[in-house]
Length: 247
Image 1: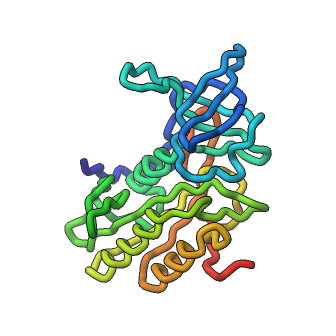
Image 2: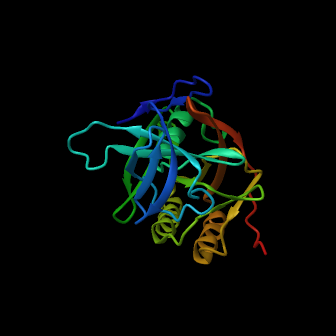
Image 3: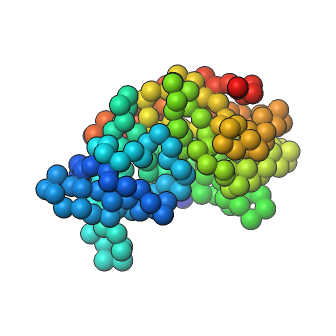
């Protein structure tokens, strides 16, 4: 469904009611045991397929949402973790929603000027791209959004685990660009302690290689961080990036 651009600046996406607890362990990628403040231990869904390096340490304060849906096996979802320098959003569904909301609100200067924003659009060879921007007088713009939570000494890096899916998206964007479309990679840093961004070559060197190749072939790189608290999350500022090979 297409969303019209409305230019309401810096819109905040509120969290559902948050339930505080303490992280006991994260395991099998999608499960996390959390001790609630009343002493009860619950197993929450962890909506993040990455390694979550630097944001899944046992003993850290975390915040869950509760969903009383009879179809759900796990009623709790892990939303946030409190790291020493920042709250960190761990739910990978949030960046796509936030990026689309911010673009439609006119908060992403690089992507202003389009009439509609559509999410989860079929494109390329049997693939889906997160966002499609369209206007009658402009070429379509495909935007792929990536959630970034790995920050070390102020440097945000992506990915935090080898991502064949992410590599595929870079190839798809280049193909769409060659077909005449505008294409962008949007890295959304879901925390507030990053000063710069670079590909995580030590974790997935092939992704770093493909990202540099995509940039050389016209795929735009856009990086933003967020303002985040226990009430909600919004897009914050543009973060500089470095595509040179880092030691």
